[in-house]
Each structure stands twice: as structure tokens, then as C-alpha cells.
Image (cartoon, rainbow, N blue to C red; front, side):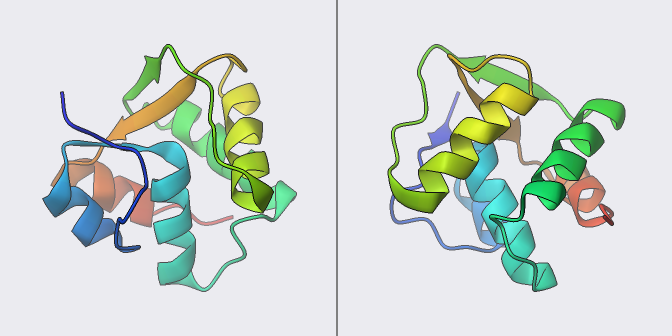
Length: 108
């Protein structure tokens, strides 16, 4: 399983998809927000996106590690872990073409 830790990744869903099979939720969210012109740290948007991932059946994988980034990005990453149901794990999304299309359909 290939996983993007976020270091050195280009912030576009297409680049994430082409680079690795699995990408962490925070990188996917940040790339989607950049494409849509949204603030990735907006709590209300974070909550809606986490709910979208759950209700739309987006395939998530848990990793046995906590998010380690600092600053606002780290806070948002930790918030996603809590919202997705396990504050002691990081989550990754399989970023195939079908999933990327589904993610792009998210509207708050």
C-alpha cells in the first residue's frame, strides 16, 4: 500500500491521485479546498466533509499512528481523526479516479 504522508506533495487532487494510491485525509482535504477556494481550517466545513466521507461510503483506511504535524494543519488533521471515529489513528483515502470524482462532488 502506498501512502502519502504529505511531505512534498503537490496540492491538487489529480497530482495526489497520480502520485500515490493512498493519501492522508488532511492532504486530500487541503487539495480539495485549494481547488474550490475554501479555507481548509473552517470547522464547519471540516465537520461537513467528515460526514460526507461517512455517508458517501468513501473507502478510508486507519493507520496505527496519530497525526504528527504541527500548527493549524496538525489541529485540523487531529480534528478529522476525532470526527472519523478514532482520535488515536490517522486516516488515508484511496485516491483512485472514481473516488476523486466523488470527492469533487462534495458541496457544503
